[in-house]
Length: 404
Ligand SMILES: Cc1cc2nc3c(=O)[nH]c(=O)nc-3n(C[C@H](O)[C@H](O)[C@H](O)COP(=O)(O)O)c2cc1C
Image (cartoon, rainbow, N blue to C red; front, side, top):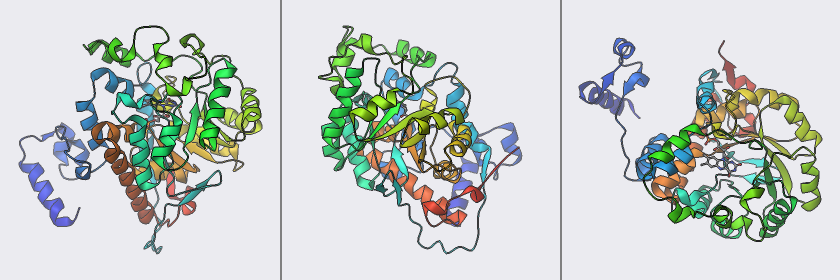
């Protein structure tokens, strides 16, 4: 925003009857814009968006109550969900001046794959709940900017269709179940479809207590069985990646999984294996010892355990334990270019986003996803310019500090 438009905007704010200042905000009206409360504004098209939260407002409006709840909520009292966002405030940026930043580039490499951007689409299941195009909309949106996509194995579209829509292979995420043949069938199918990497999610081996989701669901007056069916195995049958596995809902249990499971996957496929859901140095070490090709820091967007520990807070110890032996990825709570920059500065090689692109999908389908990715890429490039980093590999620990 240039100075003139900023002044006009501030004049508008000062005059607007819809603006409510908090007590503290009144003291520092201009400087503390974060204390100005504006009503939700609903953008009419992706181009109107100023940041990814504009898509959230629309998603909240258009989604059925229970689907919005499924996407938005965390576990327990949402301690981890909140910690994921709050933790970014404890990290500040350190700008290096007088670097020629006329040519900032986001290109990078991950597991031998050249990427246009370190920003990746995290696996999110059941995307037809958010838009009729489901995972195909996300694939087309990701194609527009060339961002890597990870497909959930509880997707509403098959990997074959998603790869066709994406125009190149996606990575495949796996919830294995305790029945090995289910995992094996899916892994082999993904490899045959062209996926080069399988992402094993290990943070939901026990159940998670999604209280707030339950509260959203009971407010939804529609008959859920119309779409979801009412039989015990209707859920599994509706998921294309489970077809041909012979799996039933009763198999949906991963509580017996241990590190040996990686050996079984390794025997079944030559795909890279990434372990998703790591938050400690101990487990990072176990991943590398068990032969993982990359470690993916994640608390499932605050949907797994109510640890109250933000993902970005667990990143440093994982990076230290991995010590450059394999790449480190991260997700959970990333909404802005500054968030992404902070993770890269703390040693992540790629940053995945979940809800942010789902907000785009829910709001405007593939155009929404494309715009979210485009905005985050542009925000990241801008922060890199401000910090004096012209490439992803230039971003380092010198660019961040921690309060306290
Ligand atoms: C609606 C929803 C569905 C998800 N489904 C999966 C899934 O099928 N597999 C998986 O590994 N993670 C799943 N996740 C977790 C994401 O991969 C990712 O870890 C999380 O969304 C990151 O946090 P963020 O949403 O704050 O960006 C899901 C997340 C959401 C919000």
